[in-house]
Image (cartoon, rainbow, N blue to C red; front, side):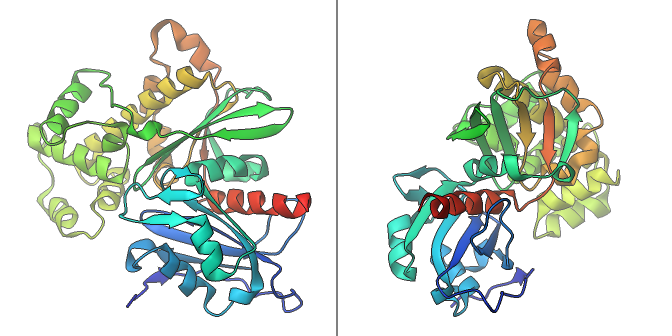
Amino acid sequence: MDSPHREETSHPTDPDMAAGAMILAGDIGGTKTNLALFPPADGRPRPVYSRRLCTIDYTGPEAIIEDFLDGRHQEVEAACLAVAGPVTDGQARFTNLPWTLSADRLGHRFGWRRCRLLNDVEATIHALPLLEATEFEALRPAVPLPDGNLAIMAPGTGLGMGLAIQRRGEVVPLASEGGHADFAPIDEESLSLWRYLKAQRPRVTLESVLSGAGLERIYQWRRHLGETHPDPRTAQRIENSDDPPAQISNLAMHRQDPVCVQAMACFVRCLGAAAGNLALTATTRGGIYLAGGIAPKILPELKRGGFEAAFLDKGRFRDFLASVPVRVILTESAPVLGAASVAMAWNSAR
C-alpha cells in the first residue's frame, strides 16, 4: 500500500478539453517525480495540471502514474516519460532504483494510443530550444555557435550526461552513460579523494563523486583527513538528517561549517574539470549545460571561480575552452517540457 508524501503543484483542467485528447509527460527520477497533463498545442507546451511526487514513497513507476491520474485515465491519449536510466527499445532500467519500465506495458495498462520512454537527460536536451532566457544562468559568457555541438551534465541523485548535435536549427540528442565513466583526479587533493573512495568500492566513477551521494562522500573524506574539525552541532545535524547531502550543501552555502565548505569547494572543482573534459570530448562550441537538482541550488558556489578555473585548466586547449559557453538550467521542469515536446511532435505528424 503506497503512502505518498508529495509536494503538489496543480492547474485546473480545462472543462472544454475533450476526453482522450491530453498528453501525459513526466520525469521519474531517483528522488522526485514530476508529472503533468498537456493539451495538444503549437509552440511551447503548457500544462493544465501537474504534480510533484516523492518517488521512493511508491512501489514502482506504475503506482506513481496511477496516483497522479486519480481517475483521469480517459483524458490521456498518449504519454512520453523521462526516466533516470538508460532506455533501449522501449525498455528502461533505473540506475539508482531496482525498477524497470516498458513503454508497451504502460500503454497497455493505461490504454494509451502511444507511449515513449526517454532518458531524462535526453528529454532535457529536447527542451533546450524551448527554454526562455530567464531559465538559464551563464557561468561563462562565451557566445554559442548556432551549429555547435552541445552537452549536458546533470548531477542529482546520480549523474546524468547527454550529448547533442545541431543540424539546421534542429537539436538531435545522443544518448550517453558518461556519468559512469571513471573519475580522474586532477591534483593531489582529488587523488587523495580517489584513494579514499577506491578503498571502499571496486570502481570510482564520476557519479561516485558528482552526485548528492558523492558530495556526502567528499564530506566524509574531509572528516577522515582530520585537517579541519567540523562544528559538533552541524556535524550532528548532518548525521541526523534524512537528506545529508542537502544539509552539507546548505551549511557550505551559508559558511556554517568548515568541513562542508571544503567539501563543496572540492565538489565544484571536480565538476568543473569533468565539464571541461566533456567539452573537449564533444567539442561543444554550442555550449555545456548544467542541469539536475544540484547545480541550480549551488549557483553562488559555481560562480566563485573554482568551477571555471578547473574547467579551463586543460593546458594548450585553454583557449578552445575559453570559447565554450557554460550555462545552468534553472528550471527543474525541463525534462517534463522536453518529453511533452516530443509527444506534441506526434500530433503534428498525424
